[in-house]
Length: 243
Image 1 (cartoon, helix red, strand yellow):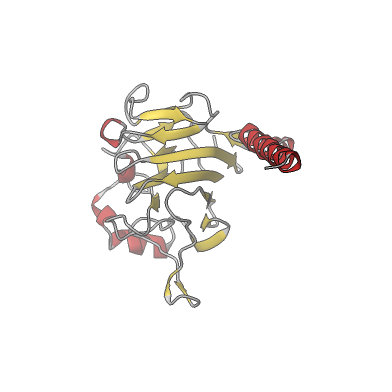
Image 2 (cartoon, rainbow, N blue to C red):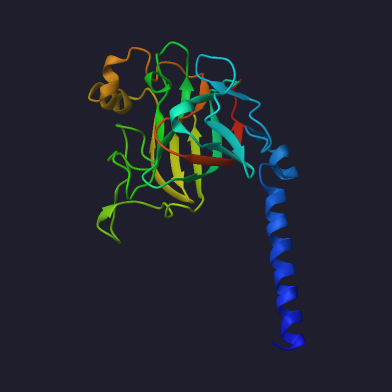
């Protein structure tokens, strides 16, 4: 290889390294515009401050910080974790990366009245849509709402990327509507406490859980007992009245 080719490769490598460093520097941070809009970080990329296991102090060792991500590395010793603060109405955004056949979830309005986070908090399902055993797919509101059929494929809408790639989640929760988005694709909307919502709960496994979706204030929870999963860029924007 001649010197010109070597120099070109060196410059390309330097450019890739610079791009990677710039991307890493932007992880788990807020821009000035996001700060002005009221966004808050739920994970600083360095430690587990702001989180604890459900109904106990601290975080079990199955949760670790790995390469700037909040990672469930050992689901046998992780358990579900919740935020220190409670939120009522908000917009939540995050990136997740799930393992082969992995299954996790994001719960909201979680309270201590239930024996598990899902006994009070509705769940935004996360999973490997191709290999996970659970037939309730990523982005669905567990056992309650799912996306429509995609006319382009003839199958239920699925905007997720393959295992090993980062996916982006947006969850909007307001009194007027809740919205689930995956990778910029809107899946569906619903209204908490509406007649339709109550009817769906009554037909689901949650009908026997008296505190399920009962209140409008609670923790954000991440499920950590069904496989390995990583989270980064966890950001929340409280909306009028959240605490």
